[in-house]
Amino acid sequence: MADKPNVSEVENFDISKLKKTETVERNTLPTSDTINQEKSGNRPELNDLRQFPRDKLNHVETEEKNPLPSRETIEQEKSA
Image (cartoon, rainbow, N blue to C red):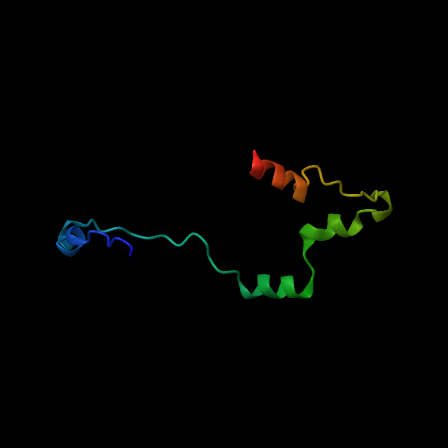
């Protein structure tokens, strides 16, 4: 059974000791124009990506450099 936290200080806390604070909303919601522009796909910041020549890209094979241990390796480590 888990120990219960001591909440006696919380129960006896005097709310009048708290200071008044003013909050400022910094992450505003986008405007309807911004939403419509994103829906239409007409985003000027993506023009460079659209104009990038894809034929200059090279195909790359992914090589796993940290493979998982084999079953034999795990058994050896257990017995050590």
